[in-house]
Image (tube, rainbow, N blue to C red; front, side, top):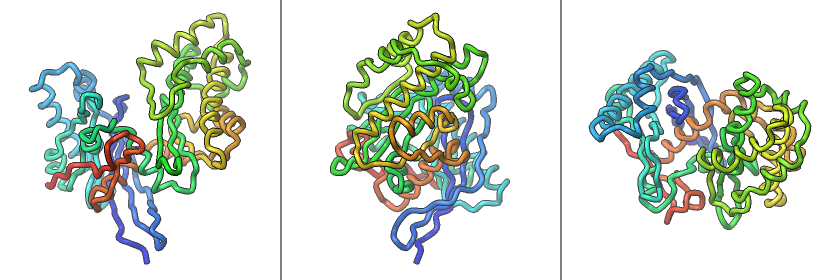
Amino acid sequence: MESKLYPVLGLMSGTSLDGLDILYVEFWQDASGRWRYRMGASETRAYPADLRAALASAMGMSGLELSRLDADYGHFVGRCIRDFVAKYSFHPEFAAVHGHTVFHQPERALSLQIGDGAAMAVESGLPVINKFRNTDVALGGQGAPLVPIGDALLFPEYDFCLNLGGISNISFDAGASGRVAFDISPCNLALNRLAARQGLAYDKDGALARKGRLVLPLLQALDSLGFYRLEPPKSLGFEWFSSEFWPVVESCPSSSVPDLLHTVTEHIASQIARVCHSQPGKRSMLLTGGGALNLYLKERISALAGVEVVSASRQMIEYKEALIFAFMGVLRMRGERNCLRSVTGARKDACGGCVFLP
């Protein structure tokens, strides 16, 4: 007999400021207790120009200005929820909202995602859950990554869950150590910057990379970067990319863009393969993120790692984070753990999220 059905909304705001991702999804547990889901309508609401500018400058605001933005953004998100629900005639139980990150400094025990929960609940007429990271940070954790709980419970048939975004990151079950997750290498951050030299937003299907030839000294230099010798948990940021990785790429000014794309693609795939080889017996991989659309990169990962690589659907690629936060909301409402200490380094697993009623 199947369990209760949870019809919910998941909302995600990324640091790219592309807009607000909204997803309707239904969750339930089957007779074996495994979590199942069914994704419904999804869309991205673009930010008005003034709100986008305010979000982009939030880090430099005064306390009063930031408080005002917190309220304004909450009302905006609440209206988006209300309009989305009305458009599709959905009846969700609640909305799980990540919010927009302004500060994330876990070493100082703080992580701030704005979007006033009361404003969202009142505007939408729905219960709203937000502030998913705070409890984990208070417990000494990084407050990130949070997606691995979804990887573990929603995609258990895959040995690896690999996300190819600006940075490539992976999660997998490490046995006695529990679920682990960490960043592997730069990915689209590097590939898209190289494609821009050809006037392209990205290298469609990896076509340019496929035409290129390997620049062996560059590959060896990238593979020798110190980050790759660190043990997880570990993470990468734009600062490291700019100061350590990109200067190595720029040290080959005479190489063509296709050759650079080919070599960086090989580097990314080889670093991912190295992680996979450290986990003998694991053979299947779910691929998400924009890089999952790069056919050449996908081929190289499969060839070097020796795993079966399965690309997620286009909707999953675009809305996986919204899906996971919706699921974390379900776990929060059930009083179950939704933050894993094996991933974040916190003192214990946590059930994160604040609930606001309309």
